[in-house]
Image (tube, rainbow, N blue to C red):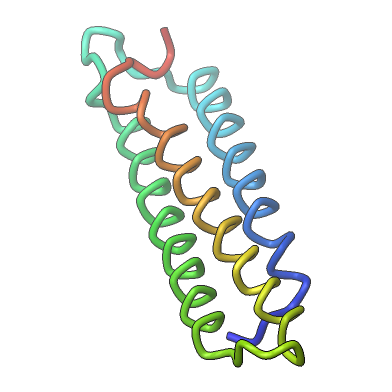
Length: 115
């Protein structure tokens, strides 16, 4: 992956889109077809949230790994310092997005969705 300034924005922007879609989708689903509170946390709605979260976490983790690998392949001299910085910063931001996705989805494991 070639270091690019867009990688500094893409990870957190996609995380924000995931966050809005997840909580907006849960709100709409709870308004239209709420699952029974007696089911607890194991509902179709929480399963959908977890499935989407696992996919997004894997995608963000893969992007972080690719950015880290790209940073390792750059020369350590001053000519590629900017590109190395962007690759390392993108790695940190993609990793932050992956961890944030996983942490935001954790309540779906233990809490009923529409209570």
